[in-house]
Image (tube, rainbow, N blue to C red; front, side, top):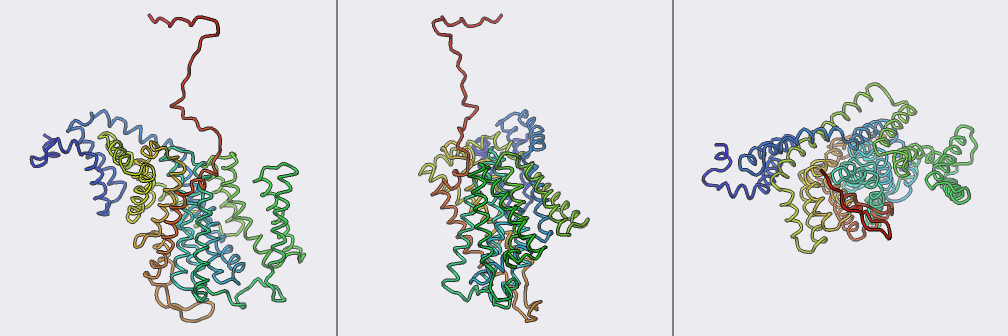
Length: 554
C-alpha cells in the first residue's frame, strides 16, 4: 500500500498524520535552502503531500478538484496586471536618460554641500522609486552614473556604495512598488490603500538616509567632501551659484498652488499640478527666448524635475484621486515612459525588445511562483496547516506586540535566503489570518512587512541590490575618464560593509512604524469600513401590527 511508503514501521502513521503540517513546512524550508527553484519546489511538495494526505485519510481526492479553479483565479486576477505595466515602465525609464539628467542636475544643486552627491543620490533614488518602482533599475542607473563621480572626488567607498544600494531599495516601499501590489493581493486589501499607507513611511525612511549621511559628514567631513568649484558646471558667469532665482520660483509655485486651492477651490493635487506647469513654462521660455529671469541652475532644475514629477502625477495622482485603478495607472505610466523616451530621442526597436523581453521574464517568474504557492497552499490548508500556524502564533506571549516582534524577526531572518516575491507568496498568506484575529489592520501590517522585506535587498551576502551594484561598480584599478588618474575600484567587502549601517536604519524604520502606526493610517480614507460578512439584515413588522406568520413551503 502507498501508506507504507509514507509511514514506515519506524515512524507511526498516526504521528505523521498528526504532524503533517509542520512536516510540510520543514520540507519546504529544506528544499529552498538546498537551492531548488522555488516555484517547482512548491508545486512538487504540494502534489506529493496531497497524495500522502489522501492515503492517510486527512482529506479526500475531491480537494484536488479545486486546483483548476485556483489556476483560473490567478489568470482572472486583474490586480496582477499592474506588475508587467510597472516593470515595463521602469525598464523604459532606465534607458530614457531621465536618471542621468536627474543625477547630474541634483548633484550640481547639492554639490557645494559636504555630502552633496550622497544627498543627490538619496533624493534621486526616491524620485526613481516613485516613477519606476523597480529596484534593479534604480541601483544600476545610480551605480553607473554616480559611483564614478563620488569616487573621483574622494568619497569613502563604503559610504558611496551603501548610499547607492540603499537609495535604490526605496523602490521597494515608495509607490508604485511591485511588492506593495503583491502584498495587497495576498492580504486581500486594496492596492490603492496600500499605496496611500506607504507614502509617509517611504518619505520618513528617505529622511533617515539623509540623516545618516549628515551625521557622517559632521563626524568626518573628509568621507564625503563638497564638489570643488571647477566641478560646478551650472554656476553663473560672475561665479555665483544661482540659488536665488530658483528659490523665488519655488516660492511663486507655492503661492500659485495655495491661491488656486483657496480662492478657486481647486483640488489640492490639481492646484499643485497647474503651478508646476507654470514653472515649467517659465523655465522653457527662459531657455528658448533667453529671458535671463532664471539662473542656469534654476532653469536646469525645473526642466529636469518636471517630467518625472508629471509621470508621478500621471501614475500615483490618478490612483489617489480615484480616476484610475492601479492597473490603469500602470498602463498610463508605461505610456508616459514611452513618450518620455521619445522626447529624449532614446526610443528604439532594440530598447523596446529588451524591455518587453525582461518584462515577460519577470512576469512569468512571478506567475510561476504564484502557481506553485497555490498548489502548496491547497495541500497545506487541506491538512489544517493554516490552523497550525494560527494557533502557534496566537499562543505567543505578549499578544499583538509579541506577535509583531516574532513575525518581524522571522521575516528579517528569512530575507537572508528568500527574495520578497517568495516571502510574499509563501509566508504572508499564513500571517494574514492571525494578524486579523489580533485586531491588526492589514494595510498597516502590509506596509510594516514591506519595510521589513526591504532589508532582503541589502542583506550581505545575498542582497540583490548588492549584486546589482557589484555588477556595475569598477572592480580593481581603472582610469578615470575625466581626470585621467588611475583609481582604485570598489571591493565586494566594501560594498557589504557599506550596506550594513543602512540595514540598521531600515530596522529602525520598522520600529518607528510599530511605535507610530499613524504614519500609515494617516494617509487612508476615514470612511466607515464595513465587513460584508458581518452585515445583518433584520426585517421588522410595521408598527401597531401583528408580525406576519412565517411562510409555509409545500
